[in-house]
Length: 286
Ligand code: SF4
Image (cartoon, rainbow, N blue to C red; front, side, top):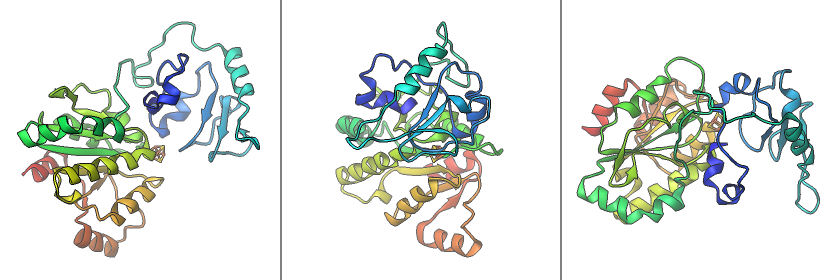
C-alpha cells in the first residue's frame, strides 16, 4: 500500500491513512490477524492461508482459485461493495496500532516517481555539478526470505553521505525507514514506488543523461538489484535491452543465467554478481 500515498488519485481520500505490510514473502504472517479485508490489485499474491482467505479479494490481473475476484463491468466500473461491507463488519483496529516490522512504527517518505524527482531536476543537477552528490545508487528489486539479502540493507547503511539511494519494489522494505540524512534538502533515500515503477527510474536516468549530455552508462549511477524469479525477469531484460551496463545483481543469479550466459552478460553488459557491501562500494566509488 505504501506507493499509493504517492499517487494523487489515491492520496486525495482521507480514509487512506497509512501503510500496512512489507514484502511479498511476509504476507502469511502479516495478514493473519488484521481486522480488515485485503484487495490485491497488482503483483505478487502468496497462496492465502485459510485463516484469512475469506478476507482476500483480487481484481484486475491478479487472481487465485476460490478467492473472490472483483470484475470490471462493461462500463469500466467495479463493484467494491462486498469488500467495503466486510471492512465495516471487521471494524479495523480500535486505536492507532503501530507494529514495528509490519507497518513500520515510523514515518517514511515516498512518492519520488520521475515527475517528482525531475520537478527538482535543477537542484539535483546543481548538487551533482558542485560535488555535493557524488553517486546515485538504484537499490531495488524483489525481496525474498533466503539469507544474504541483508546485503542490500548493509549497502545502504554503508553508502557515503555524499551519495543518494533511489529505491523501488519489495526490496526497499529492508531499509526504507533508515534515517540516513539529506543532501541540500533532498532526502538521501528516495522511494520511487513499486516494481512497476522501474519505468520511473529509467525516465530519471534518461533525463539526467540528457541534462549532462552523456549516455546513461556515463552517469554517476549504479544499479544494485535484488533478484527474485518474478517480475524482476522482465525488468532485468528491459534494462539489458536498453543497454544499461554495470548492474550489480544478487544475492543469487537468475536460474536462466548459465555459466555461458553469465560470461556473455559480463563481457557485453559488465554485469557483476554482488560480493560484500564494503568491496562493492569501494569498487564503484574508486
Ligand atoms: S518487487 Fe518483485 S516480489 Fe515484490 S511485488 Fe514486485 S514482482 Fe512481486
